[in-house]
Length: 474
Image (cartoon, rainbow, N blue to C red; front, side, top):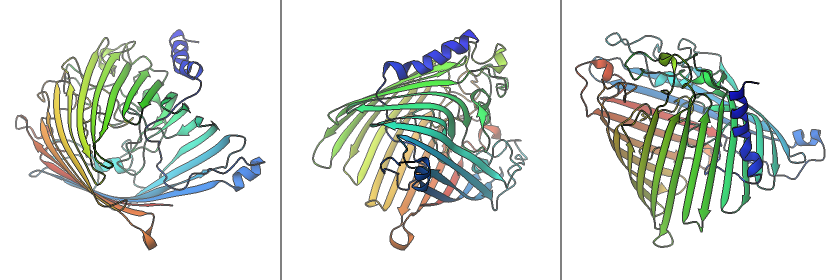
Protein backbone atom coordinates (compact mmCIF):
# COMPACT_ATOMS: atom_id res chain seq x y z
CA UNK A 1 0.00 0.00 0.00
CA UNK A 2 1.19 3.54 -0.79
CA UNK A 3 2.83 4.96 2.37
CA UNK A 4 0.92 8.25 2.06
CA UNK A 5 -2.43 6.43 1.95
CA UNK A 6 -1.43 4.21 4.89
CA UNK A 7 -0.55 7.25 7.02
CA UNK A 8 -3.85 8.90 6.06
CA UNK A 9 -5.90 5.84 7.02
CA UNK A 10 -4.13 5.50 10.36
CA UNK A 11 -4.71 9.17 11.17
CA UNK A 12 -8.42 8.91 10.32
CA UNK A 13 -9.12 5.74 12.29
CA UNK A 14 -6.98 6.66 15.32
CA UNK A 15 -9.63 8.74 17.16
CA UNK A 16 -12.06 5.81 17.25
CA UNK A 17 -9.57 3.78 19.29
CA UNK A 18 -8.23 6.49 21.55
CA UNK A 19 -11.55 8.08 22.45
CA UNK A 20 -13.66 4.92 22.23
CA UNK A 21 -16.81 6.39 23.80
CA UNK A 22 -18.11 9.75 22.64
CA UNK A 23 -19.41 11.95 19.81
CA UNK A 24 -21.89 14.64 18.82
CA UNK A 25 -22.57 17.50 16.43
CA UNK A 26 -24.33 20.59 17.79
CA UNK A 27 -27.18 19.95 15.35
CA UNK A 28 -27.68 16.52 13.84
CA UNK A 29 -28.17 16.26 10.05
CA UNK A 30 -31.92 15.79 9.66
CA UNK A 31 -33.20 16.59 6.15
CA UNK A 32 -36.29 14.54 7.07
CA UNK A 33 -38.33 15.81 9.99
CA UNK A 34 -40.57 12.83 10.65
CA UNK A 35 -40.55 10.80 13.83
CA UNK A 36 -37.40 8.91 14.75
CA UNK A 37 -37.70 5.20 15.37
CA UNK A 38 -37.02 4.63 19.07
CA UNK A 39 -38.69 1.26 19.56
CA UNK A 40 -36.91 -1.57 21.38
CA UNK A 41 -34.86 -4.16 19.51
CA UNK A 42 -36.76 -6.41 17.12
CA UNK A 43 -36.51 -10.17 17.61
CA UNK A 44 -35.78 -10.90 13.93
CA UNK A 45 -34.55 -9.17 10.79
CA UNK A 46 -38.04 -9.49 9.29
CA UNK A 47 -39.54 -7.79 12.34
CA UNK A 48 -36.97 -4.99 12.07
CA UNK A 49 -38.08 -4.27 8.49
CA UNK A 50 -41.80 -4.59 9.27
CA UNK A 51 -41.47 -2.10 12.13
CA UNK A 52 -39.32 0.34 10.19
CA UNK A 53 -40.19 4.00 9.60
CA UNK A 54 -40.84 5.85 6.34
CA UNK A 55 -40.27 9.61 6.09
CA UNK A 56 -40.78 11.87 3.10
CA UNK A 57 -40.20 15.42 1.94
CA UNK A 58 -41.77 17.36 -0.94
CA UNK A 59 -40.30 20.70 -2.04
CA UNK A 60 -41.19 23.43 -4.53
CA UNK A 61 -38.57 26.12 -5.17
CA UNK A 62 -38.94 29.32 -7.19
CA UNK A 63 -35.78 31.38 -7.67
CA UNK A 64 -35.20 34.53 -9.70
CA UNK A 65 -32.09 36.70 -10.12
CA UNK A 66 -32.40 40.34 -11.18
CA UNK A 67 -29.12 41.77 -12.45
CA UNK A 68 -28.48 45.45 -13.12
CA UNK A 69 -28.95 47.21 -16.47
CA UNK A 70 -29.11 44.90 -19.52
CA UNK A 71 -27.24 42.01 -17.92
CA UNK A 72 -29.13 38.72 -18.08
CA UNK A 73 -31.87 37.96 -15.57
CA UNK A 74 -32.88 34.41 -14.72
CA UNK A 75 -35.69 32.43 -13.13
CA UNK A 76 -36.32 28.78 -12.31
CA UNK A 77 -39.11 26.59 -10.97
CA UNK A 78 -38.15 23.26 -9.45
CA UNK A 79 -40.26 20.56 -7.83
CA UNK A 80 -39.19 17.35 -6.20
CA UNK A 81 -38.64 15.59 -2.94
CA UNK A 82 -37.27 12.55 -1.26
CA UNK A 83 -38.33 9.43 0.58
CA UNK A 84 -36.45 7.46 3.21
CA UNK A 85 -36.86 4.13 5.00
CA UNK A 86 -35.08 3.03 8.16
CA UNK A 87 -35.53 -0.31 9.87
CA UNK A 88 -36.25 -0.73 13.55
CA UNK A 89 -33.29 -1.73 15.72
CA UNK A 90 -32.00 -5.30 15.52
CA UNK A 91 -29.47 -5.81 18.33
CA UNK A 92 -28.45 -2.19 17.86
CA UNK A 93 -28.16 -2.38 14.07
CA UNK A 94 -30.28 -0.36 11.65
CA UNK A 95 -30.35 -0.20 7.87
CA UNK A 96 -31.45 2.97 6.04
CA UNK A 97 -32.03 3.82 2.38
CA UNK A 98 -33.26 7.07 0.87
CA UNK A 99 -33.41 8.80 -2.49
CA UNK A 100 -34.54 12.04 -4.08
CA UNK A 101 -35.82 13.38 -7.40
CA UNK A 102 -35.99 16.84 -8.99
CA UNK A 103 -37.91 18.21 -11.99
CA UNK A 104 -37.35 21.46 -13.87
CA UNK A 105 -40.93 22.52 -14.50
CA UNK A 106 -40.40 26.01 -16.06
CA UNK A 107 -37.13 27.91 -16.16
CA UNK A 108 -34.82 30.11 -18.16
CA UNK A 109 -32.36 28.31 -20.44
CA UNK A 110 -29.55 28.04 -17.92
CA UNK A 111 -27.07 26.67 -20.46
CA UNK A 112 -26.86 29.98 -22.39
CA UNK A 113 -24.23 32.51 -21.19
CA UNK A 114 -24.86 36.22 -20.80
CA UNK A 115 -24.32 37.88 -24.18
CA UNK A 116 -22.29 40.80 -22.76
CA UNK A 117 -19.87 39.03 -20.41
CA UNK A 118 -20.01 35.37 -21.47
CA UNK A 119 -20.81 34.51 -17.85
CA UNK A 120 -23.10 31.59 -17.07
CA UNK A 121 -25.94 31.46 -14.57
CA UNK A 122 -24.82 31.22 -10.94
CA UNK A 123 -27.80 30.64 -8.65
CA UNK A 124 -30.74 28.99 -10.44
CA UNK A 125 -28.62 26.23 -11.95
CA UNK A 126 -27.97 25.03 -8.40
CA UNK A 127 -31.57 23.81 -8.22
CA UNK A 128 -30.73 21.14 -10.79
CA UNK A 129 -27.35 19.68 -11.91
CA UNK A 130 -24.39 22.06 -12.18
CA UNK A 131 -22.47 19.36 -14.04
CA UNK A 132 -25.09 19.16 -16.82
CA UNK A 133 -26.99 22.45 -17.33
CA UNK A 134 -29.10 21.08 -20.19
CA UNK A 135 -30.64 18.24 -18.16
CA UNK A 136 -34.18 19.04 -16.98
CA UNK A 137 -35.57 15.58 -16.18
CA UNK A 138 -34.31 12.36 -14.66
CA UNK A 139 -32.51 14.16 -11.82
CA UNK A 140 -32.61 11.46 -9.17
CA UNK A 141 -30.07 10.34 -6.60
CA UNK A 142 -29.58 7.53 -4.10
CA UNK A 143 -28.38 9.73 -1.26
CA UNK A 144 -28.61 7.44 1.77
CA UNK A 145 -27.59 3.80 1.95
CA UNK A 146 -25.97 2.90 5.25
CA UNK A 147 -25.74 0.45 8.09
CA UNK A 148 -25.54 1.86 11.60
CA UNK A 149 -24.85 0.44 15.02
CA UNK A 150 -25.99 2.24 18.17
CA UNK A 151 -24.87 1.57 21.72
CA UNK A 152 -26.00 3.69 24.66
CA UNK A 153 -25.86 7.26 23.25
CA UNK A 154 -23.15 6.59 20.64
CA UNK A 155 -23.33 5.52 17.03
CA UNK A 156 -21.23 4.36 14.09
CA UNK A 157 -22.49 4.62 10.49
CA UNK A 158 -21.01 3.17 7.32
CA UNK A 159 -22.16 4.05 3.80
CA UNK A 160 -23.92 6.97 2.12
CA UNK A 161 -25.28 9.47 4.61
CA UNK A 162 -25.67 13.10 5.67
CA UNK A 163 -23.31 14.83 8.09
CA UNK A 164 -23.37 18.32 9.58
CA UNK A 165 -19.96 19.72 10.55
CA UNK A 166 -18.53 23.25 10.31
CA UNK A 167 -16.82 22.60 6.95
CA UNK A 168 -18.69 19.61 5.46
CA UNK A 169 -22.42 20.01 5.84
CA UNK A 170 -25.87 19.86 4.29
CA UNK A 171 -25.88 23.48 2.98
CA UNK A 172 -29.58 22.84 2.30
CA UNK A 173 -30.26 26.01 0.30
CA UNK A 174 -31.39 24.37 -2.93
CA UNK A 175 -33.51 21.32 -3.73
CA UNK A 176 -31.49 18.61 -1.98
CA UNK A 177 -28.58 18.75 0.50
CA UNK A 178 -25.05 17.47 0.02
CA UNK A 179 -24.29 13.87 1.04
CA UNK A 180 -21.11 11.92 1.81
CA UNK A 181 -19.95 8.32 1.75
CA UNK A 182 -17.67 6.79 4.34
CA UNK A 183 -17.56 5.83 8.00
CA UNK A 184 -18.62 8.21 10.78
CA UNK A 185 -18.36 7.64 14.54
CA UNK A 186 -20.23 9.72 17.11
CA UNK A 187 -19.27 9.19 20.76
CA UNK A 188 -21.76 10.62 23.27
CA UNK A 189 -21.13 8.68 26.44
CA UNK A 190 -20.28 11.64 28.67
CA UNK A 191 -22.66 14.41 29.61
CA UNK A 192 -20.41 17.37 28.88
CA UNK A 193 -18.00 15.99 26.30
CA UNK A 194 -18.48 14.54 22.81
CA UNK A 195 -16.36 13.55 19.83
CA UNK A 196 -17.04 12.94 16.16
CA UNK A 197 -14.58 11.30 13.79
CA UNK A 198 -14.96 10.33 10.15
CA UNK A 199 -13.23 8.94 7.09
CA UNK A 200 -14.85 10.01 3.80
CA UNK A 201 -14.00 8.73 0.34
CA UNK A 202 -16.93 9.91 -1.83
CA UNK A 203 -19.24 12.93 -2.09
CA UNK A 204 -22.49 13.84 -3.79
CA UNK A 205 -22.49 17.64 -3.52
CA UNK A 206 -25.61 19.77 -3.40
CA UNK A 207 -26.81 20.62 -6.92
CA UNK A 208 -25.56 17.34 -8.42
CA UNK A 209 -27.17 13.94 -8.99
CA UNK A 210 -23.99 11.85 -9.18
CA UNK A 211 -21.46 10.48 -6.69
CA UNK A 212 -17.79 11.45 -7.03
CA UNK A 213 -14.57 10.38 -5.41
CA UNK A 214 -13.51 13.11 -2.98
CA UNK A 215 -10.69 14.22 -5.28
CA UNK A 216 -13.07 14.58 -8.24
CA UNK A 217 -15.68 16.56 -6.30
CA UNK A 218 -13.41 19.63 -6.22
CA UNK A 219 -14.16 22.07 -9.04
CA UNK A 220 -17.68 20.93 -9.95
CA UNK A 221 -18.75 24.49 -9.13
CA UNK A 222 -16.93 27.54 -10.51
CA UNK A 223 -13.20 27.19 -9.82
CA UNK A 224 -12.09 30.82 -10.30
CA UNK A 225 -8.45 31.63 -10.99
CA UNK A 226 -5.04 30.65 -9.65
CA UNK A 227 -3.09 33.12 -7.48
CA UNK A 228 -1.14 34.22 -10.60
CA UNK A 229 -4.38 35.04 -12.44
CA UNK A 230 -4.44 32.03 -14.77
CA UNK A 231 -7.63 29.98 -14.92
CA UNK A 232 -7.81 27.28 -12.25
CA UNK A 233 -7.48 23.80 -13.70
CA UNK A 234 -7.69 21.53 -10.65
CA UNK A 235 -11.01 19.85 -11.47
CA UNK A 236 -10.26 16.22 -12.31
CA UNK A 237 -6.55 16.68 -11.60
CA UNK A 238 -6.39 16.56 -7.79
CA UNK A 239 -4.86 13.43 -6.27
CA UNK A 240 -6.14 12.57 -2.79
CA UNK A 241 -7.05 9.43 -0.85
CA UNK A 242 -9.94 11.23 0.86
CA UNK A 243 -10.88 13.17 3.99
CA UNK A 244 -10.32 12.46 7.64
CA UNK A 245 -11.95 14.72 10.22
CA UNK A 246 -12.43 14.95 13.96
CA UNK A 247 -14.47 17.27 16.13
CA UNK A 248 -14.43 17.68 19.91
CA UNK A 249 -17.11 19.58 21.82
CA UNK A 250 -16.86 20.27 25.55
CA UNK A 251 -19.54 22.01 27.63
CA UNK A 252 -19.60 23.26 31.22
CA UNK A 253 -22.82 24.00 33.15
CA UNK A 254 -24.78 25.06 30.04
CA UNK A 255 -22.76 28.28 30.10
CA UNK A 256 -19.42 27.69 28.40
CA UNK A 257 -18.49 25.49 25.44
CA UNK A 258 -15.41 24.82 23.34
CA UNK A 259 -15.54 23.43 19.80
CA UNK A 260 -12.41 22.03 18.17
CA UNK A 261 -12.46 20.64 14.63
CA UNK A 262 -9.76 19.40 12.29
CA UNK A 263 -10.28 18.41 8.63
CA UNK A 264 -7.39 16.65 6.90
CA UNK A 265 -7.65 16.37 3.10
CA UNK A 266 -4.93 13.95 2.03
CA UNK A 267 -2.27 15.55 -0.18
CA UNK A 268 -4.19 18.84 -0.29
CA UNK A 269 -4.61 20.74 3.00
CA UNK A 270 -5.39 20.69 6.70
CA UNK A 271 -7.98 22.99 8.29
CA UNK A 272 -8.36 23.49 12.04
CA UNK A 273 -11.09 25.44 13.87
CA UNK A 274 -11.27 26.47 17.52
CA UNK A 275 -14.37 28.22 18.84
CA UNK A 276 -15.37 29.41 22.32
CA UNK A 277 -18.99 30.20 23.28
CA UNK A 278 -20.12 31.83 26.53
CA UNK A 279 -23.76 32.31 27.53
CA UNK A 280 -24.65 34.66 30.37
CA UNK A 281 -28.24 34.55 31.64
CA UNK A 282 -29.82 37.87 32.55
CA UNK A 283 -33.20 36.44 33.56
CA UNK A 284 -35.31 33.36 32.92
CA UNK A 285 -35.54 34.23 29.20
CA UNK A 286 -32.94 36.90 28.49
CA UNK A 287 -29.31 36.00 27.87
CA UNK A 288 -26.14 37.39 26.36
CA UNK A 289 -23.96 35.31 24.04
CA UNK A 290 -20.24 35.84 23.38
CA UNK A 291 -18.28 33.79 20.83
CA UNK A 292 -14.76 33.79 19.42
CA UNK A 293 -13.47 31.75 16.51
CA UNK A 294 -10.08 30.94 14.97
CA UNK A 295 -9.42 29.04 11.72
CA UNK A 296 -5.98 27.98 10.46
CA UNK A 297 -5.21 26.29 7.14
CA UNK A 298 -1.97 24.75 5.86
CA UNK A 299 -1.01 23.05 2.63
CA UNK A 300 -0.39 19.29 2.71
CA UNK A 301 1.73 17.35 0.23
CA UNK A 302 1.75 19.10 -3.13
CA UNK A 303 -1.65 20.74 -2.73
CA UNK A 304 -3.31 18.18 -4.98
CA UNK A 305 -1.01 18.02 -7.97
CA UNK A 306 2.67 18.38 -8.81
CA UNK A 307 1.80 20.92 -11.52
CA UNK A 308 1.22 24.32 -9.90
CA UNK A 309 -1.71 25.31 -12.15
CA UNK A 310 -3.54 22.11 -11.20
CA UNK A 311 -3.17 22.38 -7.42
CA UNK A 312 -6.14 23.24 -5.21
CA UNK A 313 -4.17 24.63 -2.28
CA UNK A 314 -0.79 26.36 -2.80
CA UNK A 315 2.22 24.24 -1.85
CA UNK A 316 3.43 25.45 1.57
CA UNK A 317 0.50 27.91 1.56
CA UNK A 318 -1.47 28.96 4.62
CA UNK A 319 -4.45 31.08 5.65
CA UNK A 320 -5.77 32.47 8.93
CA UNK A 321 -9.23 33.69 9.89
CA UNK A 322 -10.79 34.75 13.14
CA UNK A 323 -14.16 36.06 14.26
CA UNK A 324 -16.07 37.60 17.15
CA UNK A 325 -19.76 37.55 18.00
CA UNK A 326 -21.87 39.36 20.59
CA UNK A 327 -25.53 38.42 20.80
CA UNK A 328 -28.71 38.90 22.80
CA UNK A 329 -31.60 36.45 23.05
CA UNK A 330 -34.89 37.18 24.79
CA UNK A 331 -36.78 34.12 23.60
CA UNK A 332 -38.71 35.90 20.84
CA UNK A 333 -35.95 38.27 19.75
CA UNK A 334 -32.50 37.01 18.80
CA UNK A 335 -29.93 39.52 17.61
CA UNK A 336 -26.16 39.55 17.11
CA UNK A 337 -23.27 41.68 15.91
CA UNK A 338 -20.59 39.65 14.11
CA UNK A 339 -17.09 40.34 12.82
CA UNK A 340 -14.80 38.21 10.66
CA UNK A 341 -11.24 38.79 9.57
CA UNK A 342 -9.38 36.71 6.98
CA UNK A 343 -5.74 37.78 7.06
CA UNK A 344 -3.57 38.59 4.04
CA UNK A 345 -1.46 35.43 4.57
CA UNK A 346 -3.43 33.72 1.81
CA UNK A 347 -6.86 32.75 0.56
CA UNK A 348 -9.25 30.94 2.87
CA UNK A 349 -10.06 27.86 0.75
CA UNK A 350 -12.69 25.20 1.35
CA UNK A 351 -14.46 23.47 -1.56
CA UNK A 352 -17.87 25.07 -2.03
CA UNK A 353 -19.11 21.66 -3.09
CA UNK A 354 -18.67 20.40 0.50
CA UNK A 355 -20.58 22.96 2.56
CA UNK A 356 -21.20 26.55 3.59
CA UNK A 357 -18.80 28.81 5.48
CA UNK A 358 -18.62 28.51 9.30
CA UNK A 359 -17.71 32.21 9.55
CA UNK A 360 -19.92 34.28 11.88
CA UNK A 361 -20.55 36.78 9.05
CA UNK A 362 -22.01 34.24 6.61
CA UNK A 363 -25.22 35.27 4.83
CA UNK A 364 -27.07 32.98 2.38
CA UNK A 365 -26.35 33.55 -1.34
CA UNK A 366 -22.74 34.69 -0.92
CA UNK A 367 -19.54 33.40 0.66
CA UNK A 368 -16.11 34.68 1.59
CA UNK A 369 -14.40 31.43 0.57
CA UNK A 370 -11.59 31.98 -1.90
CA UNK A 371 -10.61 35.31 -0.33
CA UNK A 372 -7.86 36.75 1.82
CA UNK A 373 -7.42 40.14 3.49
CA UNK A 374 -11.12 40.44 4.35
CA UNK A 375 -12.87 42.58 6.95
CA UNK A 376 -16.56 41.70 7.37
CA UNK A 377 -19.19 42.94 9.81
CA UNK A 378 -22.75 41.65 10.04
CA UNK A 379 -25.78 42.58 12.10
CA UNK A 380 -28.61 40.04 12.40
CA UNK A 381 -32.00 40.02 14.06
CA UNK A 382 -34.66 37.31 14.16
CA UNK A 383 -38.11 37.95 15.57
CA UNK A 384 -40.56 35.17 16.45
CA UNK A 385 -43.99 36.64 15.72
CA UNK A 386 -45.85 33.46 16.72
CA UNK A 387 -43.86 30.80 18.62
CA UNK A 388 -43.07 27.74 16.46
CA UNK A 389 -45.16 29.22 13.64
CA UNK A 390 -44.09 32.59 12.21
CA UNK A 391 -40.60 34.15 12.15
CA UNK A 392 -38.99 37.20 10.53
CA UNK A 393 -35.26 37.63 9.97
CA UNK A 394 -33.06 40.49 8.77
CA UNK A 395 -29.32 40.56 8.12
CA UNK A 396 -27.19 43.51 6.98
CA UNK A 397 -23.47 43.11 6.30
CA UNK A 398 -20.52 45.01 4.88
CA UNK A 399 -17.68 43.01 3.31
CA UNK A 400 -14.38 44.74 2.56
CA UNK A 401 -12.51 42.55 0.09
CA UNK A 402 -9.22 42.81 -1.82
CA UNK A 403 -9.30 44.43 -5.25
CA UNK A 404 -10.87 42.26 -7.97
CA UNK A 405 -7.57 42.26 -9.85
CA UNK A 406 -5.63 41.06 -6.82
CA UNK A 407 -5.87 37.43 -7.89
CA UNK A 408 -3.54 36.24 -5.12
CA UNK A 409 -6.27 37.06 -2.59
CA UNK A 410 -9.46 37.19 -4.69
CA UNK A 411 -10.15 33.88 -6.40
CA UNK A 412 -13.53 34.71 -7.96
CA UNK A 413 -13.14 38.41 -8.77
CA UNK A 414 -15.76 39.61 -6.29
CA UNK A 415 -15.68 43.33 -5.42
CA UNK A 416 -16.32 44.70 -1.93
CA UNK A 417 -20.05 44.70 -1.28
CA UNK A 418 -22.91 45.25 1.11
CA UNK A 419 -25.60 42.62 1.49
CA UNK A 420 -29.08 42.77 2.98
CA UNK A 421 -31.19 39.63 3.53
CA UNK A 422 -34.86 39.46 4.47
CA UNK A 423 -36.31 36.09 5.46
CA UNK A 424 -39.91 35.17 6.31
CA UNK A 425 -40.94 31.68 7.45
CA UNK A 426 -44.36 30.32 8.35
CA UNK A 427 -45.18 26.82 9.62
CA UNK A 428 -48.77 25.69 9.13
CA UNK A 429 -50.85 23.70 11.60
CA UNK A 430 -54.17 21.90 11.63
CA UNK A 431 -55.25 20.72 8.18
CA UNK A 432 -51.91 21.80 6.64
CA UNK A 433 -49.63 20.51 9.39
CA UNK A 434 -46.26 19.50 7.93
CA UNK A 435 -46.27 22.35 5.41
CA UNK A 436 -44.03 25.41 5.73
CA UNK A 437 -43.29 28.34 3.42
CA UNK A 438 -40.12 30.42 3.26
CA UNK A 439 -39.33 33.63 1.37
CA UNK A 440 -35.75 34.90 1.18
CA UNK A 441 -34.69 38.11 -0.53
CA UNK A 442 -30.93 38.61 -0.86
CA UNK A 443 -29.79 42.01 -2.17
CA UNK A 444 -26.14 42.84 -2.90
CA UNK A 445 -24.77 46.35 -3.49
CA UNK A 446 -21.39 47.27 -4.92
CA UNK A 447 -18.86 48.87 -2.55
CA UNK A 448 -15.68 48.40 -4.58
CA UNK A 449 -13.98 49.07 -7.90
CA UNK A 450 -15.20 47.07 -10.91
CA UNK A 451 -13.15 48.89 -13.58
CA UNK A 452 -16.29 49.28 -15.75
CA UNK A 453 -16.09 45.56 -16.45
CA UNK A 454 -19.43 43.80 -16.05
CA UNK A 455 -17.81 40.42 -15.42
CA UNK A 456 -17.13 41.74 -11.90
CA UNK A 457 -20.80 42.78 -11.58
CA UNK A 458 -23.07 40.11 -13.03
CA UNK A 459 -24.34 37.67 -10.38
CA UNK A 460 -22.03 39.35 -7.83
CA UNK A 461 -23.20 42.91 -7.01
CA UNK A 462 -26.02 45.31 -7.91
CA UNK A 463 -28.45 42.40 -7.94
CA UNK A 464 -31.24 40.68 -6.05
CA UNK A 465 -32.08 37.01 -5.65
CA UNK A 466 -35.68 36.06 -4.81
CA UNK A 467 -36.34 32.65 -3.25
CA UNK A 468 -39.77 31.17 -2.51
CA UNK A 469 -39.78 27.67 -1.01
CA UNK A 470 -42.62 25.35 -0.04
CA UNK A 471 -41.78 22.29 2.06
CA UNK A 472 -43.96 19.41 3.18
CA UNK A 473 -42.50 16.87 5.58
CA UNK A 474 -44.18 13.62 6.60
